[in-house]
Length: 220
Length: 220
Image (cartoon, rainbow over all chains, first blue to last red; front, side):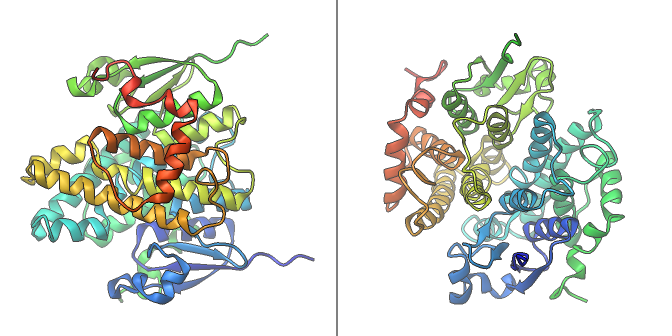
């Protein structure tokens, strides 16, 4: 009998990209031992963690005997290929392209703009104060979610979730953005389709268990 | 006999994301009729184009009878699933995760920070002058390429290309970043592995034919 692969997830309670991997693992019923990398204490730059990921970025999913996997969307695709059921992508290639496009609108076009490294640059060299940084966050969250809302609201392929009636990578990325917006106490008006889909995600145990505020290290 | 699908690619000579799709189509030998959307003239916001993509973003790949496909990485995955040979991803799931991670370090972590919409915000509301914008561009191109260089240089899976000896999505994304850097006359020092892989890409006809300066609408 072969033993199932052993996984370690290098993670932090708050990060959007870590949240995505947690939801995917929960949906598949895969257990990963979570190792906390406290980015508030800059532990992602520690010599110990740099041996895991020389780039100093989380999440990193480590399967024993293999090089660490990085980049949340690449990890989601890996998890889906390793254990195809329940699927995180539809079966037809046009549907898969639609789901991946929605996921990328959020994880590639929106999230990279509001990461800690961008905050560091803008509030450092560029002289942004707290209000300027908050306006920047609200602008890009709002732009990204408005675009996704428009795409979802007008498309008959949208169902209970972003694509049909089961959660996909698109829902994982959408929920990951909403989760960090809540931590920053940012709300975006006039996104009724997204609000409805988020309620469906929250009712799903795999998403609920991944809530940043329920993770080790989160504020009480 | 079934007829092959007909494709239209809504494109502009200069954009990094359009370049990626051009290379993938060239590698697969798929012909798409290119329709120029002049983003310098804001044509991506024209009523005609908004009927194709209500989000006003290129590239969009349109197959007759289907909804337009958007987001370059989703389009690359679609092209690879539609016509699997030559493959844009390796066969093993760990290799696929590695290639996708490198592609995302460039297309998600780097490129979204230097797009026209970010320039518009920073040079508008945020008061960046030309020198501040150029410093921002150089900072993020440099950060992204240094991270990719470190990953490629130390990994035995790196070959003539980013992963082994045939081009993958990782090379397409890498070349797409270098292509726009050249247009902006930005060079990043100390990336010998990337420089070597770029030379291999340039020697490949599929990449050479996609050179932004060879496209309709490019400056003479």
